[in-house]
Amino acid sequence: GGNKARKLGLLLGEARAQGADVIITVGALQSNHARMTAAAARIFGWEAILVLTGQEPEEIQGNLLLDHLLGAEVRLINTTEDYVLMGVVADLARELTARGRRPYIIPRGGSTGLGAAAYLEAGLEAFAQLNALGVRADVIVHASTSGGTQSGLLTATKWSRAGALVVGISAGPPQATVVQRVTGIVRDLGQVVRTEWEVHPEDVIVYDDYVGEGYGIPTAETIEAIKVTARTEGVLLDPVYSGKAMAGLIDLVRRGVFTRDQTVLFWHTGGQPALFAHARTLTAPD
Image (cartoon, rainbow, N blue to C red; front, side):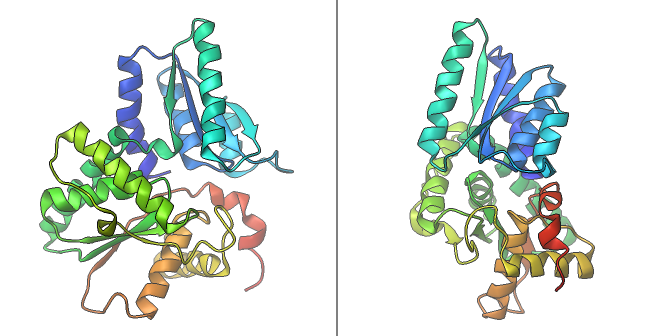
């Protein structure tokens, strides 16, 4: 999951400093973040417990298959409510602590102030690379759900005075939910890196027009965007995040929201293992 590795570099550094010996995180059934957390935890020699939303599928595929290969303990919870999910995690952490373990909890997507600091760094890297090429990005488009990526990129544009618009395409939550998450994380990030920039909801650009039936359910436009990008650029998008983001970008271009004289940077956040969990949909006749 592309953007998750950067966040985990900082989050697991904190876990190590705190003496953790087991990592708990949450996500959807095909969570890129959960799978990446399981892999990173193994590098440190830690156990990973993944509390995932959903029901046991008929076939274990995609990220869920990789979770099992990595030896993660997977607990499935049939809820869509974050407060229920985090309540389960809190109970689990108390149980582990009572047994003498030292759990470290990572919230959905690793989207905290510290996690977003990794994407502040990523944004600054990107702007440095663009400057070296003599290119100025007018717009950055990416998938935005838990808010950590958008928080880091938005802060990077302000920090560097790059002037790019950061446009998030929601992969599931309503616009207002993503905006609220991003504004909160940017403020937390400000405390981590001690920036004085204040974020307001109107600073956060999010489109929720491309969600379709819900999170993790690819739309026809998502499938089209995945196929077009694969067949014209040789780049594989995923059906949960980047596919929806590209579908949004294509539509915004067609509607004239972005013009020919603007340079638009599409930020690919990874997640290709989820393609295999949607093989039947992706291979259906056009």
